[in-house]
Amino acid sequence: MYGDLGLKLVQHAKRTQSLPQLPPYQSDIVRSVTREVRDLDRDVTEILEPFNGHFDPAEEPATACSLLVHHLCMRRNKRCLLAYHRVRVEAIEEMCWSGSDLLEQVQASQNKVAEGGAGIGSAEGSGASSLSPEEEEYARQYGDLLAAYKGQWTDIDLTGSLEPPRDLFIDVRVLKDAGEIQTEYGAITLTKNSQFFVRQGDVERLIAQGFLQKLN
Amino acid sequence: MSYYDIDAILTDAQKVPCTFEITIPGLGYLEGNSNIDIKQGTRVELPLWLAEMLGVSQRLGTEQNVISLDLPPALAPRVQNALKANPCTVDLRSLASHYYSLGERILGLLEEDELVDILSETFKKRAAEIADHAHNPQGVISSGGEFLKGLDENERQLFKTAHESAKAIRAFLSDRSSGKK
Image (cartoon, rainbow over all chains, first blue to last red; front, side):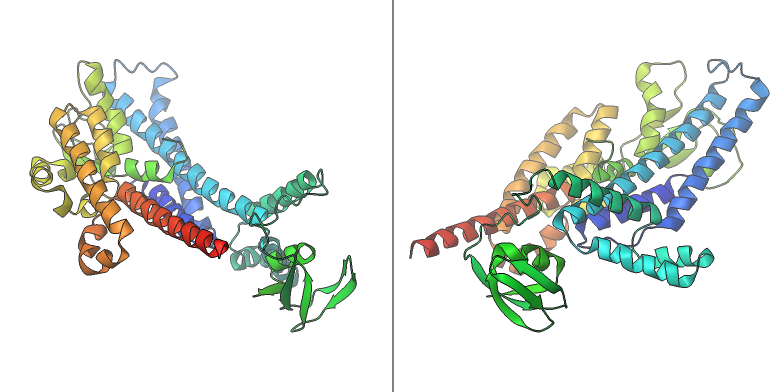
């Protein structure tokens, strides 16, 4: 029946809300739902054709009702589509704020696209990432927007941790090579598997990005 | 209730039994046969989002109703009696995943004064039981599993919130006492 696919999308969205990571974009279902809307619209045009624009609902209650059902189905599908995308967009925005490796993920899939060549690559590349191409674009632009917003206050890190630190200095272990960073006490070179005693404020970003691990 | 609220959309997807009062061309797919007219007097289960709008004419008092609505099985007298007898033994989730929301929507469409009291009484009784389980993690394992499985979506949220708040308070208190030492 009409509207069943939309429901499937919403059930996906419901599951998405309780998952820590964003599941793959359901491009097949989204496409089917939009096709359903287009079919319904064509049916409505067909039904209205014999009336030449002079349709009186009072004279033809049965036809009017059929039109109403078609219209309601379209509206329902629209609501399902919008709600599904909104849940995903909210998750993406949250990822941008928490500074997780969303952009890295996007980068990785882009590289795959570049390797796979122009034509087929774009389709396969987006399959590897859990975001649709539009969502990747959204994430990138939202990230830019967030960076511009944060740039207004150089002395506050808006995306920093809200938990007050217990110690000024912490032990960290390097999980991935991160190159050289500048601190108040000079430069440190972060090579994999090495361990440092550094000021927490200097490395907070790197911990969030997963380069360093905090040791107790 | 927001347009984008996932739970609201899922509430709307729950089915209500309806009877068609007029013959409508080309709507056979609602019944499962495509391209056949739907006949007067056909009984079908329609999702709430469709049934509500079609049923509205009923309340406006137009000459001919498009469809007439019935109580969904989840709210039938049999279930009402069970809830009256003991609210905590009924598995609401198997009846409808958004049970209270469904009841709320149905009450907007049908006049069922008794149902209002039954539902609010049920919620009150069950809420106390839920709070009990949420604060005693041991109790959940031994006896409450069956009951907790039958919670509807709103009650699940309630359970989760109660459980997490109890945990947060415990964490806060232990944090404070360890800070003093």
